Length: 120
Picture (cartoon, rainbow, N blue to C red):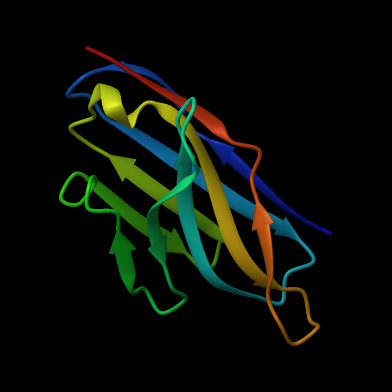
């Protein structure tokens, strides 16, 4: 069984910063891509940022130059540093990872979500 546990959400004022963490644990042979998604009330879940096992990254246009995704492969952890936060960044943020537990293929896992609230 694999678990993704997120931490670091909270409430900040516009212009502030937060750092989200997501640690994967359990039966893990390898982790491929990891990423962060978010879902605001009344909206669909959207990709915020993703990072491959080799460190290649991609970002939603709305967060480029403000957010930075990184990962520590030794700790099976992915991070999202969020700077210059805006009220429109308010959402539940979900961690996602493509994890191979030894079956030779990856499966999609999700964290439970962490709330980020940015006030103006």
